[in-house]
Length: 387
Image (tube, helix red, strand yellow):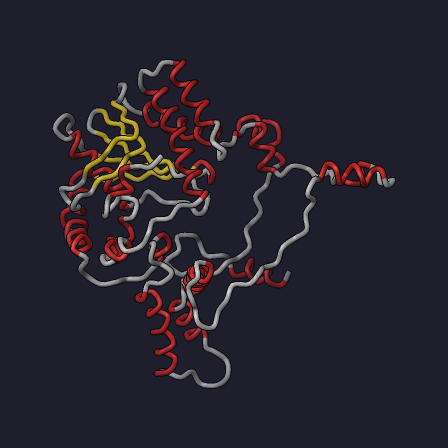
């Protein structure tokens, strides 16, 4: 289930990357595209969500809907959880639609062209709603890694530009609201921007960066946006940023003894992302070795494995014949809170056992000062550490 956006050099989904690192797109062009089970799972969830949205907001015959849904459910990656999470997405769409004074125009999986600002730029919007002077852009993200904020999200803002180019002649749009739905993280993030502010961003931030990126000009700029870059493992600029740390240490030798808090803070800041880069480098090196390439000093070896029954049912039958009671072969464990909530549904769960649920304070974790979360209390941190 590929989308047209996969073939756009400067896609909306990769915009955070090319807006920061204008050399990335042309470098990635030299490398083959890859996929993963997670990506395929996401595509399936989007196909199911698209079908449900079409049923909800357009004229779709029940028989057509059922036939298409049953076909999607035959996919090996389909789970009942996927059905529930896409229902959550539809609930969000319905809630947004209900906030309009009258029935809004709804477009599902619409091609959005923003080439006015980005050379050959286009993408596919999961859902576009428009009515009166308000435009809504809604995006489903099926992953469960980290919550994604809609605030100043360049992917969503580019989708909004594409929608403006389609509808600005038909509607007097003043406000654009962007919403990202991540049902597996129970996260819905929304953010509004005025039409004028969006167009200013497009003209003065996006257009010059996009022109550089399309031409393969500018500078490499490693950062958090490297995570999904196809060149992340063997990008020289990404490697050089950590070489620069070693050069700094060589040029500014740290006196013997204990590090000062200032030195600790500096080193942590300079080496952010180092572990992720090393993991990417190791994975890339392993793939090279497994395909016959020589990586000096390294080889592939057999990793740790665990024993398993070839036929568990037959093995358990043999164990019982040896005199072991069947009850001894199983552990009786309660379901987790989340599993029970999924089974009952959020409303019934809250009604029946909501008074028994608490959310204890999380353990302290180190984060940069730019992190939006509130600082962990000093006394709480000390108490938690002593425990």
